[in-house]
Image 1 (cartoon, rainbow, N blue to C red):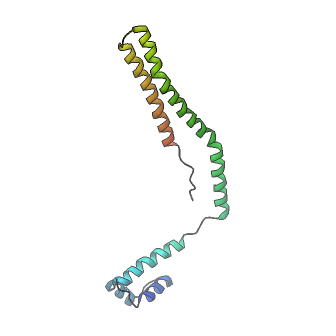
Image 2: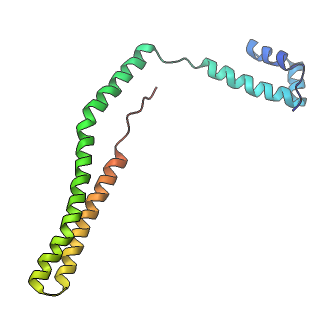
Length: 143
C-alpha cells in the first residue's frame, strides 16, 4: 500500500475531534488514509482505557499468594490420591487373581466379576481425579 501525504493530517484531525467534510471525502477515496483512520481510532480507544490503581493490583497479587498458600494442601492430597490409585491398581488385580484362583481352581465368572469391580473402582477414581482437576480454576489475576 502506498503512503499518502495527508495521513498525518487525517490522524491529527481524528485526535482533535473529527474529520472535516473535505478530509472525509479524501478518506473515502484513499486506501492509505482509511488505514490511518482505522489505526488511529484503535490507538485512541486503547489510550482511553485507564490502568487499574496500584493498590488494587497489589491487593489482588496478595490475594493470589494467599489463595495458592491455602490450596497447597489440596494439591498435595490430589497427588496422594493419584499415588494411592496407582497402588490400588497394581495391588487389586493380582490379589483378585490369587484369591479367585485359590478358591475356584479355574477362571470362572467370579474372577471376571472381581476384575470388573476392581477396574470400575480404579476407573471411577481416575475420572474423579480428572474431573476435579479440570474444574479447579487456576488462580489468575482478573483486572
